[in-house]
Image (cartoon, rainbow, N blue to C red):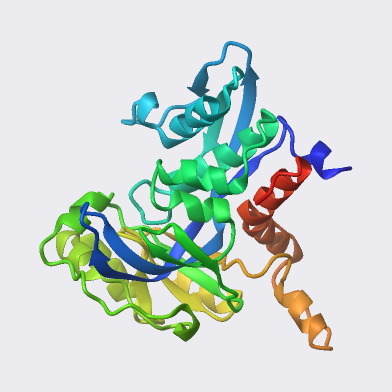
Amino acid sequence: MTESAHWDWRSAYPAPAKLNLFLHVVGRRADGYHLLQTLFRFVGHGDTLRFSPRDDGAVTLASPLPGVPADSDLTVRAARLLQAETGCTQGVQIAIEKRLPMGGGLGGGSSDAATVLLALNHLWQTGVSRHRLQEIGLSLGADVPVFLFGQNAFAEGVGEALQPVDLPPAWYVVLEPPVQVPTVTIFKDPALRRDTPPMHTADWRPGMGGNDLQPVATRQFPEIAACLDWLAQFGEARMTGSGACVFAEFATERTAREVLARLPNSMRGWVAPGCGPPRVSCCRQAASQGRAASRPCVGAGRLSAALHACDTLGRLASRLCNLHQVRP
């Protein structure tokens, strides 16, 4: 089966979560936007989108999010922006299987919007370059471009200046505090530090940096602090984005799942692998080092599902762009 046959109207299009391994506020522009440095890592957990064609040009949601008007939904806005950009008269119904919480700092809405742009650019045969899709995405939100970029990345500016970064294999325990954090509230707080010294991309190493937004968020939302305190028993716990979700990194799936098994009933969480270089699993790394893996790195089915989720936007973007000879 060719890739063009694989990605069609029957396909399920994934939208993975991201973690900010660090997030520094290094300044502020004259227009009020904050200047950031961060390291985005995708993980094998996220939403799933499906699309159904419409002949009337309308963009609709199969199941609108509670409390979110359709005209404000990022996925609807993304589809309409692509229509406006290209003059496309086709319509679509968007169905979203939500797994990522709203206001969680995992980029769920941004990832969904990026998947809409990538998928419809292919399904509608509009042929927009990935660079232009990133520009369109930036008008929807600062995190949308990295999901269109499709790789773990060091980000600067307001989040749009991206450089790919290779990261070692890792597993993450992610906790979802029962709160939604309005990003604007965190950035408007007078106590937010806005002068962290910038670092050079080449100087960053795993574990370096922190999250400048975390002290503000934990003060405003004690539920975040409680999750951080519990997770810190087992490793270095950090908040992702502006919250509310928190995470800790572990070397193996077994360790991560052992930690999750001890989670109190009052808390919600999950385990996911960090996405690495394209098509690299721990088994393949072992083979590349001249030794066979003594056993499957994780259950074969579970690894396949996790890596399928990880194998999403980066290669989805490349595949769909390549199908139409669209320049990145």
